[in-house]
Amino acid sequence: MVDVEALAARLDEAARDLTAIPKLTDTAPLDISGAYAVQRAGIERRRRAGERLAGVKMGFTSRAKMAQMGVDDVIWGLLTDAMVAESSVDVSRLIHPRVEPEIAYLIGREVRSPAEVESAVAGVAVGFEVLDSRYRDFKFTLPDVIADNASAARFGFGAWHPPRDVSNVGLLLEIDGRAAQAGSSAAILGDPARSLRAAARLALGAGIALEPGWVVLAGAATAAVPLPKDAHVRVTGAGLGSVEVTT
Ligand code: OOG
Image (tube, rainbow, N blue to C red; front, side, top):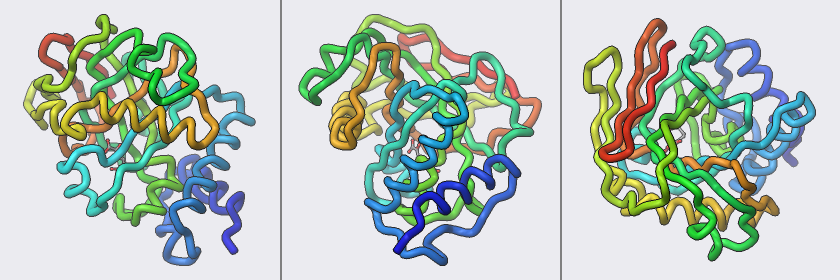
């Protein structure tokens, strides 16, 4: 038997104490569904602390990310308002942050079935996600990273543009003016819209309807890179402008 609450508390404490912990699967027989139960318990802890759900993130939707992290299945996690990074990210509150370029979708109205999700999109933007695994050396198995809410830590997005085809948008991640990663949104399941549909299907399957104002992060198009202190990060998407953040 897995003590879901105890495992969620362990991850929460790791984040709060800024101390990476050994993988949960080293000591707990965690399978995929148990891992999502731990993820959900972690989100409930955040809600009890006053955070509100703000969206859904997809993970391992590109081969670059699967290869970087050594896993081979798509996962999802939940975003909260406390994770939104407007113009700066305080990396002293994170263990070993990494940043990656993303395509973000803005949900305009409630999505009650996966078939509705594309017509419910109110905007698309270039975005970034700051990951921070609560596990030592960023090393985990699939159940571990699911339990850890897909390493979610912070996220941001540029100006919203009217919904459009974003199946092949050139993405550039710069740190202090130097190119750190470059890729195409086509790396995200061939088209980020597939990831959007998967996000709706997975969230609805777990009893969560996407709400107006929520953001869906379709997953990184490239590998993630370490996010240093005192850095200036810019992610640019061809035709979508850019988003900037300092640390
Ligand atoms: C897990 C999160 C992966 C993505 O975009 O593929 C992810 C990790 O790499 O720590 O968010």
